[in-house]
Length: 261
Image (cartoon, rainbow, N blue to C red; front, side, top):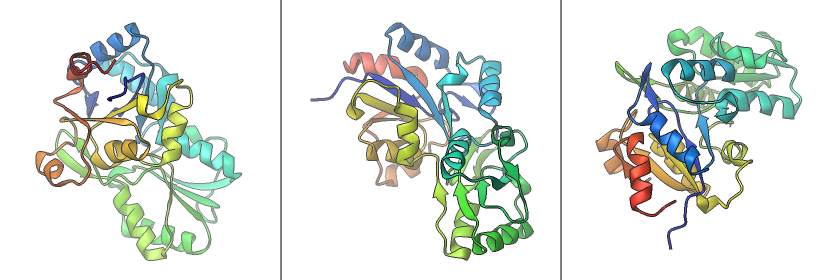
């Protein structure tokens, strides 16, 4: 028997928007869920903005979202540093994203922890070499996520996970990952849901971080054919979603037709 869905987790980039363009059906989907009193959270590996700035960006795109509904990998990094008691850290983040970390002392020379997110094209050999040596000297390597690539209007772009992998290889030290597809990140996002894991559904465009991560948590999974979705990658992947949608605008008709709510 297929369980009814009582709560949703949504990826953002590639599902609700691409670059600065809202995708069809985004607000209508959220409005319908609210009318059915079905709770949801946005769970994103975005590390380019603080949570407040991300909320402002989404509202600027026209998406009806509250900051309290956002669970970002960037903010999860803050919670992890606080939990571990770190005081000094090196932030390999864009300036905007660093705003979430203002309670920590920045230290580029002898950090206790190195936090890595998306810095675009600012990666270079010298930076990687500095980070390698600091990890070898004992700094904790923290990856906000290990995404391989992301979608832009110009096509797929290399993500920070590739550089994290390079540091792991060079130092022989695995990074501590705090974003998707880590179980702790999903648990953080669902802590206010009053339902079982099988009654939670994850909707995303990433087979590894969204669909694979959700399946490990025993959530239902919906893959949308927008964002970074590529038919040839989907066809050869060992990870397969339970449900496949053309886009976020098809979610409500699909779950209604299939009696999932």
